[in-house]
Length: 279
Image 1 (cartoon, rainbow, N blue to C red):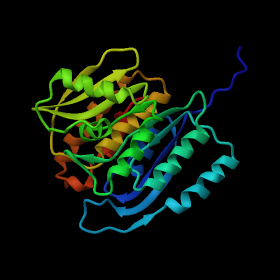
Image 2 (image 1 turned 120 degrees about the vertical axis):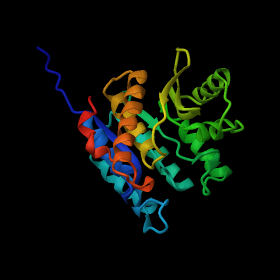
Image 3 (image 1 turned 45 degrees about the vertical axis):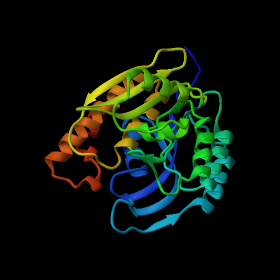
Image 4 (image 1 turned 60 degrees about the horizontal axis):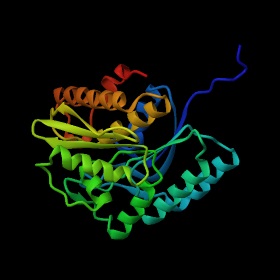
Protein backbone atom coordinates (compact mmCIF):
# COMPACT_ATOMS: atom_id res chain seq x y z
CA UNK A 1 0.00 0.00 0.00
CA UNK A 2 1.42 3.38 -1.03
CA UNK A 3 2.22 6.04 1.54
CA UNK A 4 1.70 8.74 -1.07
CA UNK A 5 -1.08 11.10 0.00
CA UNK A 6 -3.79 12.22 -2.37
CA UNK A 7 -4.57 15.92 -2.67
CA UNK A 8 -7.32 17.88 -4.28
CA UNK A 9 -6.26 19.64 -7.48
CA UNK A 10 -5.74 23.39 -7.11
CA UNK A 11 -6.11 26.01 -9.85
CA UNK A 12 -5.13 29.69 -9.57
CA UNK A 13 -7.41 31.87 -11.73
CA UNK A 14 -6.26 35.41 -12.57
CA UNK A 15 -9.16 37.52 -13.81
CA UNK A 16 -11.48 40.37 -12.88
CA UNK A 17 -14.38 40.04 -10.43
CA UNK A 18 -17.68 41.20 -11.92
CA UNK A 19 -20.65 41.22 -9.58
CA UNK A 20 -23.40 41.06 -12.20
CA UNK A 21 -23.44 39.72 -15.73
CA UNK A 22 -22.10 36.16 -15.27
CA UNK A 23 -18.54 36.47 -16.52
CA UNK A 24 -14.93 36.27 -15.35
CA UNK A 25 -14.40 34.98 -11.78
CA UNK A 26 -18.10 34.73 -10.95
CA UNK A 27 -18.34 32.11 -13.71
CA UNK A 28 -14.96 30.42 -13.20
CA UNK A 29 -15.34 29.76 -9.47
CA UNK A 30 -18.54 27.64 -9.62
CA UNK A 31 -17.58 25.86 -12.86
CA UNK A 32 -14.12 24.86 -11.65
CA UNK A 33 -15.50 23.85 -8.24
CA UNK A 34 -18.15 21.66 -9.89
CA UNK A 35 -15.33 19.84 -11.69
CA UNK A 36 -13.76 18.94 -8.34
CA UNK A 37 -10.91 21.45 -8.45
CA UNK A 38 -10.17 24.10 -5.81
CA UNK A 39 -10.43 27.52 -7.48
CA UNK A 40 -8.05 30.12 -6.02
CA UNK A 41 -8.90 33.55 -7.49
CA UNK A 42 -6.46 36.40 -8.05
CA UNK A 43 -8.60 39.49 -8.81
CA UNK A 44 -7.22 42.00 -11.30
CA UNK A 45 -10.07 44.50 -10.90
CA UNK A 46 -13.56 44.85 -9.43
CA UNK A 47 -16.63 45.65 -11.52
CA UNK A 48 -20.18 46.11 -10.26
CA UNK A 49 -21.30 44.75 -13.65
CA UNK A 50 -19.46 44.28 -16.93
CA UNK A 51 -18.75 46.98 -19.47
CA UNK A 52 -21.52 46.05 -21.94
CA UNK A 53 -23.96 47.80 -19.59
CA UNK A 54 -24.47 51.59 -19.97
CA UNK A 55 -22.68 52.33 -16.68
CA UNK A 56 -20.64 50.45 -14.11
CA UNK A 57 -18.44 50.83 -11.03
CA UNK A 58 -14.81 49.90 -11.56
CA UNK A 59 -11.79 49.60 -9.28
CA UNK A 60 -8.39 48.70 -10.67
CA UNK A 61 -6.63 46.15 -8.46
CA UNK A 62 -3.22 46.32 -10.16
CA UNK A 63 -1.41 48.12 -7.34
CA UNK A 64 -2.79 45.65 -4.77
CA UNK A 65 -1.95 42.48 -6.68
CA UNK A 66 1.76 42.21 -5.67
CA UNK A 67 0.94 42.38 -1.93
CA UNK A 68 -1.90 39.87 -2.40
CA UNK A 69 0.41 37.49 -4.26
CA UNK A 70 3.24 38.01 -1.75
CA UNK A 71 1.10 36.40 0.95
CA UNK A 72 0.73 33.30 -1.20
CA UNK A 73 4.50 33.23 -1.66
CA UNK A 74 4.91 33.31 2.14
CA UNK A 75 2.54 30.34 2.36
CA UNK A 76 4.60 28.50 -0.27
CA UNK A 77 1.43 27.62 -2.18
CA UNK A 78 1.63 25.19 -5.08
CA UNK A 79 -0.81 24.94 -7.96
CA UNK A 80 -1.67 22.18 -10.39
CA UNK A 81 -2.79 24.83 -12.86
CA UNK A 82 -2.83 28.56 -13.55
CA UNK A 83 -5.51 30.16 -15.72
CA UNK A 84 -5.40 33.75 -16.97
CA UNK A 85 -8.24 35.83 -18.42
CA UNK A 86 -8.80 39.50 -19.22
CA UNK A 87 -5.90 41.77 -18.29
CA UNK A 88 -6.38 45.51 -18.51
CA UNK A 89 -2.87 46.97 -18.59
CA UNK A 90 0.74 46.35 -19.50
CA UNK A 91 1.55 46.37 -15.77
CA UNK A 92 -1.01 43.64 -15.05
CA UNK A 93 0.51 41.42 -17.72
CA UNK A 94 3.91 41.92 -16.08
CA UNK A 95 2.47 40.94 -12.68
CA UNK A 96 0.94 37.81 -14.20
CA UNK A 97 4.20 36.85 -15.90
CA UNK A 98 5.93 37.11 -12.52
CA UNK A 99 3.16 35.05 -10.92
CA UNK A 100 3.59 32.25 -13.46
CA UNK A 101 7.36 32.20 -13.09
CA UNK A 102 7.10 32.21 -9.28
CA UNK A 103 4.44 29.52 -8.85
CA UNK A 104 5.00 27.26 -11.82
CA UNK A 105 6.54 23.87 -11.06
CA UNK A 106 7.11 20.77 -13.18
CA UNK A 107 3.50 19.68 -12.70
CA UNK A 108 1.81 23.05 -13.23
CA UNK A 109 -0.28 23.53 -16.38
CA UNK A 110 -0.72 27.13 -17.57
CA UNK A 111 -3.78 28.05 -19.64
CA UNK A 112 -3.74 31.51 -21.20
CA UNK A 113 -6.98 32.89 -22.57
CA UNK A 114 -5.60 35.94 -24.43
CA UNK A 115 -8.66 38.17 -24.12
CA UNK A 116 -7.90 41.02 -26.53
CA UNK A 117 -10.85 41.50 -28.87
CA UNK A 118 -13.74 40.05 -30.82
CA UNK A 119 -15.43 40.29 -34.21
CA UNK A 120 -12.21 41.37 -35.88
CA UNK A 121 -11.46 44.31 -33.62
CA UNK A 122 -9.07 44.56 -30.66
CA UNK A 123 -10.45 46.18 -27.52
CA UNK A 124 -9.63 49.88 -27.32
CA UNK A 125 -6.86 49.52 -24.72
CA UNK A 126 -5.08 46.82 -26.76
CA UNK A 127 -2.72 49.02 -28.72
CA UNK A 128 0.42 47.61 -30.36
CA UNK A 129 2.39 47.58 -27.08
CA UNK A 130 -0.38 45.72 -25.25
CA UNK A 131 -0.63 43.21 -28.08
CA UNK A 132 3.13 42.57 -27.86
CA UNK A 133 2.87 42.10 -24.09
CA UNK A 134 0.02 39.60 -24.51
CA UNK A 135 2.07 37.73 -27.10
CA UNK A 136 4.82 37.44 -24.49
CA UNK A 137 2.30 36.01 -22.00
CA UNK A 138 1.01 33.60 -24.65
CA UNK A 139 4.55 32.24 -24.98
CA UNK A 140 4.28 31.01 -21.35
CA UNK A 141 1.14 28.95 -22.06
CA UNK A 142 0.88 25.19 -22.06
CA UNK A 143 -2.67 25.62 -23.38
CA UNK A 144 -3.65 28.66 -25.46
CA UNK A 145 -7.35 29.42 -26.13
CA UNK A 146 -7.83 32.49 -28.38
CA UNK A 147 -10.92 33.25 -30.40
CA UNK A 148 -10.47 33.91 -34.13
CA UNK A 149 -9.82 37.64 -33.65
CA UNK A 150 -7.19 37.00 -30.99
CA UNK A 151 -5.56 34.24 -33.04
CA UNK A 152 -5.15 36.72 -35.89
CA UNK A 153 -3.73 39.40 -33.59
CA UNK A 154 -1.22 37.02 -32.00
CA UNK A 155 0.03 35.81 -35.38
CA UNK A 156 -0.21 39.12 -37.31
CA UNK A 157 -2.69 37.47 -39.68
CA UNK A 158 -5.29 39.60 -41.52
CA UNK A 159 -8.74 38.96 -40.05
CA UNK A 160 -11.91 38.07 -41.91
CA UNK A 161 -15.09 36.71 -40.38
CA UNK A 162 -15.98 34.18 -43.07
CA UNK A 163 -14.49 32.13 -45.88
CA UNK A 164 -11.61 30.46 -44.06
CA UNK A 165 -10.45 27.26 -45.70
CA UNK A 166 -9.42 24.26 -43.64
CA UNK A 167 -5.84 24.74 -44.85
CA UNK A 168 -5.82 28.38 -43.69
CA UNK A 169 -7.20 27.52 -40.25
CA UNK A 170 -4.69 24.72 -39.83
CA UNK A 171 -1.88 27.10 -40.77
CA UNK A 172 -3.20 29.64 -38.25
CA UNK A 173 -3.29 27.12 -35.39
CA UNK A 174 0.23 25.96 -36.33
CA UNK A 175 1.48 29.57 -36.09
CA UNK A 176 -0.03 29.80 -32.60
CA UNK A 177 1.62 26.53 -31.60
CA UNK A 178 4.94 28.00 -32.70
CA UNK A 179 4.66 30.54 -29.86
CA UNK A 180 5.42 27.67 -27.47
CA UNK A 181 2.17 26.09 -26.27
CA UNK A 182 1.69 22.34 -26.08
CA UNK A 183 -2.01 22.61 -26.98
CA UNK A 184 -3.98 25.27 -28.86
CA UNK A 185 -7.71 25.76 -29.36
CA UNK A 186 -9.09 28.53 -31.58
CA UNK A 187 -12.66 28.83 -30.31
CA UNK A 188 -15.90 29.96 -31.90
CA UNK A 189 -14.88 30.14 -35.57
CA UNK A 190 -18.00 31.07 -37.62
CA UNK A 191 -18.88 28.31 -40.11
CA UNK A 192 -22.36 29.14 -41.39
CA UNK A 193 -24.91 27.50 -39.11
CA UNK A 194 -22.03 26.00 -37.11
CA UNK A 195 -19.28 27.24 -34.82
CA UNK A 196 -15.94 25.53 -35.13
CA UNK A 197 -13.13 24.91 -32.67
CA UNK A 198 -9.72 24.33 -34.25
CA UNK A 199 -7.48 22.04 -32.15
CA UNK A 200 -3.82 21.17 -32.29
CA UNK A 201 -1.67 19.25 -29.81
CA UNK A 202 2.10 19.03 -30.00
CA UNK A 203 3.09 16.04 -32.10
CA UNK A 204 -0.43 15.65 -33.48
CA UNK A 205 -2.46 16.80 -36.48
CA UNK A 206 -4.84 19.77 -36.41
CA UNK A 207 -8.57 19.09 -36.49
CA UNK A 208 -11.84 20.99 -36.47
CA UNK A 209 -14.77 20.18 -34.19
CA UNK A 210 -18.03 21.75 -35.35
CA UNK A 211 -21.11 22.41 -33.21
CA UNK A 212 -24.52 23.69 -34.28
CA UNK A 213 -24.98 27.36 -33.44
CA UNK A 214 -27.96 28.09 -31.16
CA UNK A 215 -29.50 31.25 -29.72
CA UNK A 216 -27.85 34.64 -29.45
CA UNK A 217 -24.28 35.52 -28.58
CA UNK A 218 -24.01 36.03 -24.82
CA UNK A 219 -21.48 37.37 -22.35
CA UNK A 220 -19.38 34.96 -20.31
CA UNK A 221 -19.44 31.89 -22.54
CA UNK A 222 -15.72 32.24 -23.24
CA UNK A 223 -15.04 32.19 -19.49
CA UNK A 224 -17.06 28.99 -19.13
CA UNK A 225 -15.16 27.44 -22.04
CA UNK A 226 -11.67 28.26 -20.74
CA UNK A 227 -12.57 27.30 -17.14
CA UNK A 228 -13.79 23.85 -18.20
CA UNK A 229 -10.62 23.33 -20.24
CA UNK A 230 -8.38 24.48 -17.37
CA UNK A 231 -10.07 22.28 -14.73
CA UNK A 232 -10.16 19.30 -17.08
CA UNK A 233 -6.49 19.76 -17.94
CA UNK A 234 -5.38 19.45 -14.31
CA UNK A 235 -7.71 16.46 -13.97
CA UNK A 236 -5.98 14.77 -16.90
CA UNK A 237 -8.92 14.89 -19.32
CA UNK A 238 -7.86 14.71 -23.02
CA UNK A 239 -8.17 18.03 -24.85
CA UNK A 240 -10.66 16.87 -27.50
CA UNK A 241 -12.91 15.34 -24.84
CA UNK A 242 -12.77 18.58 -22.86
CA UNK A 243 -13.57 20.79 -25.87
CA UNK A 244 -16.55 18.61 -26.75
CA UNK A 245 -17.76 18.77 -23.15
CA UNK A 246 -17.36 22.56 -22.96
CA UNK A 247 -19.11 23.20 -26.27
CA UNK A 248 -22.02 20.89 -25.40
CA UNK A 249 -22.43 22.45 -21.96
CA UNK A 250 -22.42 26.01 -23.35
CA UNK A 251 -24.99 25.00 -25.97
CA UNK A 252 -27.26 23.64 -23.21
CA UNK A 253 -26.71 26.82 -21.18
CA UNK A 254 -27.72 29.02 -24.11
CA UNK A 255 -30.83 26.96 -24.86
CA UNK A 256 -32.13 27.09 -21.29
CA UNK A 257 -31.27 30.79 -21.05
CA UNK A 258 -33.27 31.52 -24.21
CA UNK A 259 -36.27 29.79 -22.60
CA UNK A 260 -36.07 32.34 -19.76
CA UNK A 261 -35.85 35.28 -22.20
CA UNK A 262 -32.77 36.52 -20.34
CA UNK A 263 -31.08 39.62 -21.87
CA UNK A 264 -27.76 38.82 -23.61
CA UNK A 265 -25.91 41.15 -21.23
CA UNK A 266 -26.93 38.91 -18.30
CA UNK A 267 -24.87 35.97 -19.59
CA UNK A 268 -26.13 32.39 -19.50
CA UNK A 269 -28.17 30.71 -16.76
CA UNK A 270 -25.54 28.03 -16.17
CA UNK A 271 -26.74 27.59 -12.58
CA UNK A 272 -29.77 25.67 -13.86
CA UNK A 273 -27.64 22.85 -15.30
CA UNK A 274 -24.32 23.15 -13.45
CA UNK A 275 -24.98 19.75 -11.87
CA UNK A 276 -24.79 18.15 -15.33
CA UNK A 277 -21.16 19.17 -15.69
CA UNK A 278 -19.31 15.96 -14.87
CA UNK A 279 -15.72 15.45 -13.79
